[in-house]
Length: 326
Image (cartoon, rainbow, N blue to C red; front, top):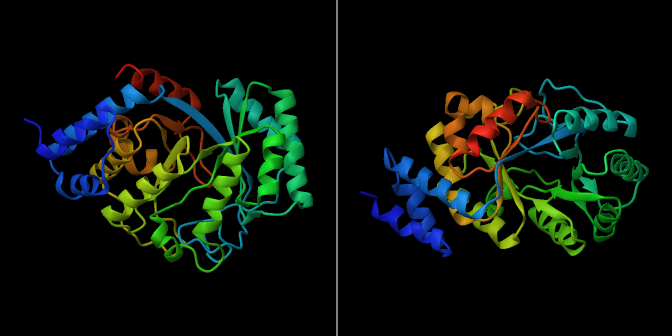
């Protein structure tokens, strides 16, 4: 017999929306074996409304030495994480990386850089535009994604003109608590403005966040609702693996059952969107990775993350083939 709270949430299958109060009650009161029923419902919603599972790959095209003071990030120059730092990769280096994942069967390629962003045209930004043109010319059926920080209306327009299909701009957490994660270097309003600029010029958006930062269930619900209000196409979700040298290095790793419940709730709040499991899939979930991928997720980042390794692309492709049968 279904828990009455989950039974009520089944209305999502009929096209109804969960209210904040309903989602928060599920988050705070569903536990134990009832979590499996919540996961099952999220998977049914995913199967009814979302596209099949897919994989994308990302490249860290400029690493470290970032002036932004993000408390969770290994690439911030304010911290002392042991990562490799290097300047912007040449267009030919990016093309070679894209060719490798293309040859492995991946058709969505993310270009990611550290730093605040490009509200103005700079020589470095112009070099990025050259890179996007090269990728489009050499791999015309590869979908180009970018994550290069804060943009103005003008620089967003230029990305659209130079073949960028999707842009990653994460909220990271409940927007009302964003300032607690980022110390005085930028604010959430700049991120939301960037998303709106991109939408104006037809660039689709991946906008998600990070679980395990010390947030409450209410924060997780509020982030999912804020994403729903933005009406983005993709929702990448990361699970924090505390990195030595960052302010969050001592934080406890999130329990797999809570990760699964959080993913399920994001799916119930955003039934039609692509929900992508990004960092933390292998390192946090370990033996429970398959369970989480049936908790509402419909995509993965494969081959590695910005500063940590991921799974081999061929292994993930076989994994996705099996997942698409559920």
